[in-house]
Amino acid sequence: MIVGGGAAGLSAAVTLGRARRSTVVVDAGEPRNAPADGVQGFVTRDGMSPAEFVRTGRAEASAYGVRFVDDSVVGVYGSLEAGFDVETATGAVLRARRLIVTSGLVDVLPSIPGLREHWGRGVVHCPYCHGWEIRDRAVGVVGVDGFAVHQALLFRQWTDRVTLLLHDGPDLSPEDLDKLEARRIEVVTGPIESVRGAASRLTGVTMSDGHHVPLEALAVAPGFRVRAEFLRPVGLLPTPHPLRPGTRLDADPTGRTAVAGVWAAGNVAEPMQQVVMAAASGVTAAAAVNADLIDAETAAAVAAGRAAASVAESR
Image (cartoon, rainbow, N blue to C red; front, side, top):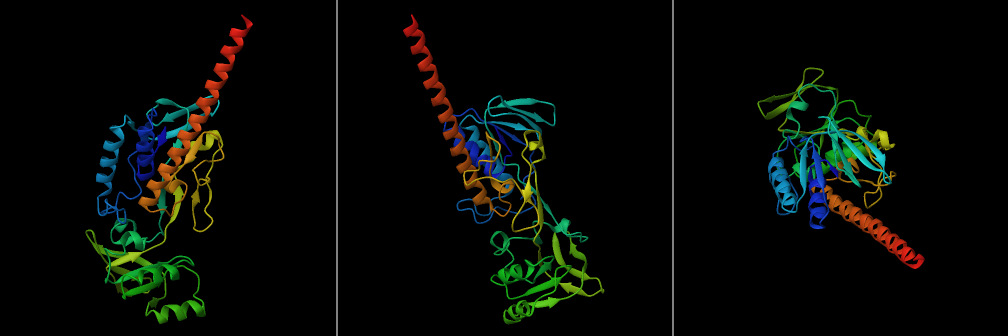
């Protein structure tokens, strides 16, 4: 069973379907990138809308016999030895031998009025996901932590009109100021009062002193909260991310977690992955699950063969 039907979950589903595994995907239909106009940087899928990406992925997985359940998971119970009972929000209980968690995360944005309304379009976070679309525009970077200077320098690659807005981040060091000045990045001090815009078009921000800064896009580094509370009954809990404010599910390079029989892939395991990376991690986890099942099935076949031979000898 796969929990989550985004890039990681769909890639895992296609891989397991092609491996002739009975596979079910439980998906709540809440992809992280839903507000975005398109999936960027994914070769052959560049610019495809997130909704079309999901529709295409579902069709591909369905062709290999994968089944989809439109629901959300509220609890996982059991163990590798006993099997897993997966309870959904509608009250259904589904059984699985192995579990791949690709449920993603929720972005946690600063509490600035108007910011959420423009998220995924006028308000962005990743230059590799959105930099080309906002090239040569006036871009503001919200300073919420020490990452803001790095983020401002990144977006400077796509436009020479970058302004660092010191919202509630730490004071800048002399070294930081030298870097920003050398790259001609303007610095505006004071908290941001609100984000301004008309319809889906961002027009700027108003600072706490009433000063208006005209902008065409705004970059912010969000925190994140992984969707994994349903794993608490089997003892699997999110841990703090080592680099950014937020959480993740710890997993090895194959996606294997500390709970036997449970793998994790995509943003639930690494929140900083782009779509193409999440898809690749889904393939990796699916291959690991298939190999694990082959080992278990082979061991069972060997044991059955030995038992049969023993019975035959006793006769």
